[in-house]
Length: 399
Image (tube, rainbow, N blue to C red; front, side):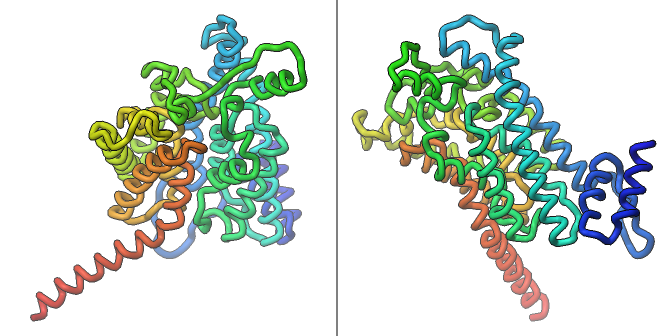
């Protein structure tokens, strides 16, 4: 009660000043808002934006914890040491590498949110609570913290605030951060060294003539893009015991998170299902081209084109992107029919980019960003089609 009373006193002291949004944000984060409706028609319900964001974060936490264990496990596996997956040694490496990513993501992002709130004189919005958690989960474990800070600043300012803040942005802020990192610092976002802790450092030591063993951390997509064998069995792919971005490896946990979001009515099952269907269709097309002999084994596209169509669903960041990014209620299509079209095209284009861009065999990020741009157009034509159908029915009735 002492903390709550002190916050009330600070709110009253700074009410009407530029500092008011900061104290209101802290109070709203810790306690329920004091504001209630007093007149007019309104709906009483237990849901609000903060609770919605908290549900998404709850779905992300298992992926975060798994990523911490997996980061250490992949490190020890790469240097040839036998360490159990659920071991303190593996977890400690994950904590020391991933927790700073989370701190930088939230620290930089929320600081910018507070600054814009005070400049514009509006409330601090809760939208970044989810973006701040998503960003550390879609980057390599060894990404330099200063690069992440620069990318977060870019994603929040250019991807969100310039459009007016939460609810107004046309691009997913977390994917905007990843896109910035990929194009600004490509050597830290691709290749066979960035996905396992210590691999980049050892590669630099070798380049300087030091006597150390190299660590290779090539992902499944990286191997397939080079027409090599995947290097991992299906169980490892599904459970997530593979190199990759921090939170994207475990398809099992992502699947459970998707079901949880559907059950709580936070995530759109239409977008998730249609994206899976789109990916399957594109995968079947490529498999058919290989079976028909249209693609030779010497082709640089053969490895990914010959991959069994449903394997695309459990490798790379496809599952994570579909469950947590494509379903963003702000940047996705809003109409039910639009969601089917939007999701299908994300899945279809993801596999298309994955196969035809060997330099970047992970296409879900670009596919979602592309469809973010076209989501309003999809909804526009869906609505116009509904209007035309209703006008035709009206003419028939009045005839």
